[in-house]
Length: 193
Image (tube, rainbow, N blue to C red; front, side, top):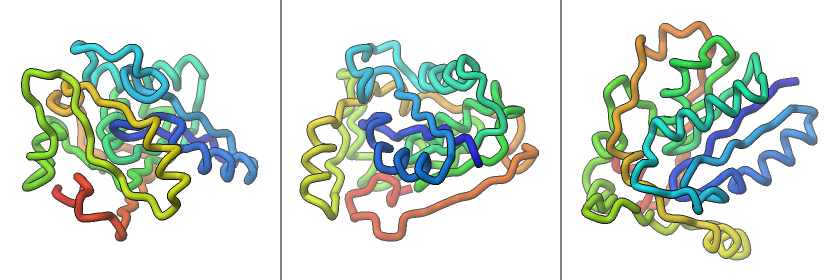
């Protein structure tokens, strides 16, 4: 059985993986879902100082303090930036890396730099340091309502700070999987990349 560390995307939280956690645990896997500072259940910790480095440290500390090893590290959407940055600190603990409909940045990339067209215009980085995200669509109205009331703003510094990698992803010894959702709505920021 595997140990999964699931890293959520922007404007959400670890709660977004609640169904996935149940299914993986029912299959006998160990699953953890750290929540990133300033969003989700940790929205009360939002500040202009929260940035990509903060979120990378959230995940690195979670893995180190839980003493997790041989993990399947999963980054969803913006979480692709977080897991990529975390590799500088915990790569030796990663058995497999998954980009789940996620950004796959190279060293020096920023989220704002990868989003193009309408997507870039929807990330309003002005004087306000909190960014309101686009409304997500759900097939299930009850799920949409449940998730909608838990959606938070996101600290803008996370989208402008570059990620750092000492070497390209392909040079790390672990295996990788890239999953792209094919039924994303036109309003999905990831489709603009």
